[in-house]
Image 1 (tube, rainbow, N blue to C red):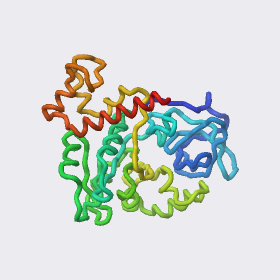
Image 2: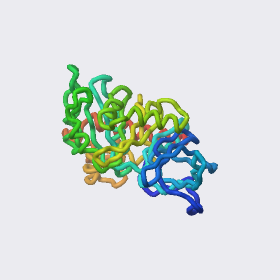
Image 3: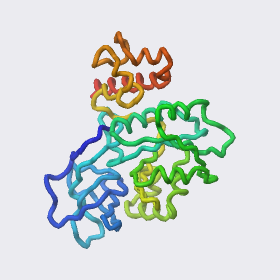
Image 4: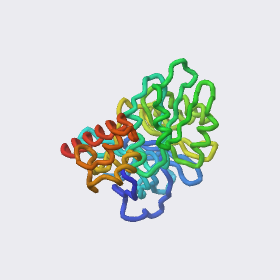
Length: 311
């Protein structure tokens, strides 16, 4: 999930008579692409080994055919990745500038999933924020959860898609960014989309028809333009998530309080587990670092190490 100009699967150079644009939705070999004038076309991947995802910049062959033939994937500025069943990195979306994690009182939030999304944003160099939806419900989030993230400097918005509370602030957060909405299933991402994107149902139907799939927004990441000038990627809800890290040492980079404390560790390669003179463990003992967040780091580190050994 590290940021960088990835060009895996890209062609060696621009194809003759090709048009450049971006992928708006992807279903395996079937795509919906958009040119720089905002025109959208159904498309397909025309080259073996070419793997593109929502948000990718691509080139396709010019022509009058109904389906455009995508022949090249352009370098990426960032990748949101998770481990696949074999422990290898699977790209979910590309060229994201902001990751917005949605949580709600129901279903009960999993702070460890929130932490992992935030870690993904930190590692790939994207902004991150938390949106607490369903503030109209009588139920509340666990005490101190949002305050913990606010103390770390993350923007935290309290909103309600049902009543409209906080939606203006959310629109301002999304302005001029390419944001991805992420979070557990059932937290209300689709409701937020309906409130933020006029005509979302019509857009959904159009994309589904173009890609040959039904109700895309529950099964694949899709890009929508916002009236505020930003772009919003809607991702499917999850039961679990972990960032795919090429090196277990990157797990610490996903926790900004650990990055800050690690400057005082005795050893430069400290894993913050059992090493002597570890400033991170000292911070946990004194309360400067949340024990829960530290445990979240330990879990991500162990998972990454296990995946690396499996790979």
